[in-house]
Length: 409
Image (tube, rainbow, N blue to C red; front, side, top):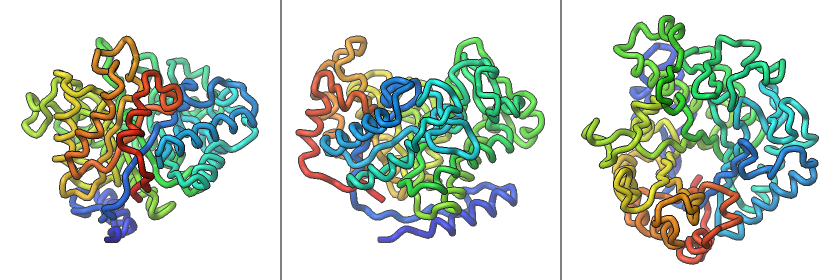
């Protein structure tokens, strides 16, 4: 069964945006998808040198060798997809026309590392039969609040009114149309240059709430929020626009490229909304203004990969209950459902007893397999695939990945 035309969706979405309407009316189904393949993915994080490169200042050859090691390890572990973080903080791991080279390569923002990490990753991943999903953080600018620490040519310094300081970090303000347009251009530059298999966003939209702090978007709300009942509704609409517009942009630049998002695992609690999950956790809809359920129901993305980073039986957010809830959301939509798995918690002594059991993650896959809507799993993150403190990943491979599988397309 082939896909519906992404171009038809893109044109309908753009038309709807121009007319000021709701893109949900543009197309009841974004596109059909083949019911084959299984996602077996791993996130390869570059922010703060979490997974790669192991430290700043390595030579180009050393960085390349480390990157290849991660790709080879993914293949040996029976995985088929690497989700590579290429824009961790309003920067780039490719020669971008819009943003500076990432500081996590050389230690100095804007300094050319002497090679092209994203271009190399795409080529080497494809040679190994791996999909390469380019992972972008759309709105984070810096892990500090001092704009003068950014390279002088940084767009955030040239446009200080685009930036909001909150929670010890700098963020682009998605309430400004010019911000949404710019960040999309910056990300689409990579899509235009490289045959990436997907564009991937993580769970950072509006920042996670910090007690006693306010995200200061008063001026933007005054300018653009007049048609909304509440500021929360306006903020959710800003993120919805960002998602819809990016989907249309991907189709325009490189048709057929997938678009996936990995949000926080709880949309809303049932105590807040009867459509929500049996949980008592932070709510993406209310706290970071991400209407993740709607993105699935209205087929704005190719796949959703909620971060279900809790163990089976956890009373606040039970993995088993959340898998069932997300399967119900995805059922009949055509949006693929993958599950984000907290490999990083396995064997961490600071975590509950369940995470000291090497079989916990394997049980996750067994439980998820009870739901036909679950099309695979993604593990956080690459460093732990390598260290595998208590053998949890090895158990997953032994129990579930005995035969290779192709990733869905």
